[in-house]
Length: 318
Image 1 (cartoon, rainbow, N blue to C red):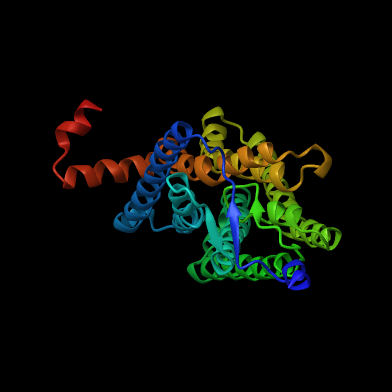
Image 2: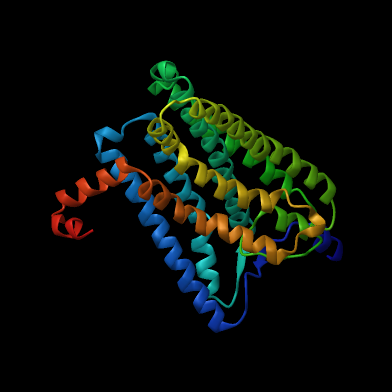
């Protein structure tokens, strides 16, 4: 029995979360519930506006629709479970649910890395090669690029999840985190950590480093093209078409890289939890606001939708 307990995979894990104090737990619950509801509202509203407004049926907004779907899936794979644990005395999660959470969380996250890269390519073609845009960003090509992003994200996630749950945990069940995330699970293992870190590093190269390098390269060409535009108004107009994407890329990649590419010696679980909160709960909430507040087409579609619903007076006051 002792040998079985040390070598077998635990049937369930305990997520330690943030704090055990009831007052703090309740405050965290209200805060994260608010973030989750705003995230759902903002992203579903973005999807609705793009679908309802024919003028927004362009490649850029097709990608934005997929980004909003990813954000909904991304947060929904973590926050409902976390909210339930904030009100529960027992914070256990079964092995199957832990595996499913890690798989979905990684799948949506990796897919978003690829999709943001595709969106930067869209801006590169639009600004640097505008005459080629109708051909290179035709509907078929856009669907293919988005499909590759989704399939690639879910495939790489399957490899990472499988490698993580092949580790030996020696009966350890307490995860010092609020979700079943790969770095936290690897730190819990008692054997095979070096191999798991190699898999995680290789995965980061393909899902973080390469996409980020491609995005930087795209914007290097974009910047060179913008600087060669003679008029100030033309430069401003060209830059405004990609400013929202730049902000989203900075927020997402900045927080994810601080989580997965931080040196192990300098990473505490408290820092990892803080980074996780930002890119799981805060960034998905901000993305619809960034695109809507900085985008005249989305604001016009929102205004049109509100007028159809009989909110002319409200919009007039705004």
